[in-house]
Picture (tube, rainbow, N blue to C red):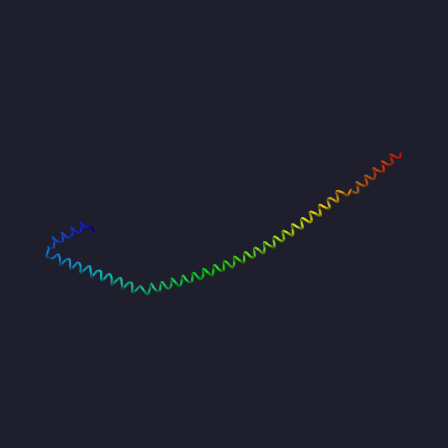
Length: 148
């Protein structure tokens, strides 16, 4: 309520009850407000005392749950790290084996290619049997023609 509203209420009360009864009414209203405040405080205290055990139990349960969750979280993190390390080690082993196999295969292919190259160069330099026979036939015919 604002100032003018309170002023209007006081004037109305003064007109209704008169100036003589106004202090008695103010005492009664003040006493009623004090009793109301006391009752409110008692109810509040009663609620706080009756719920304090419940709040304590709730706090204990909450703390217990937090502790359990933290413990499980740490265990799961350790297990995940162990599994991760195991997978990394397995992958490194497999990768190493594959690389070694690839190196061996590459070496074998290079050796085979060198051998094929060597065989091809020998075959190119070595005359074929039909070419040797043909050359021999031409030489013989030429010799016969020159002789004749």
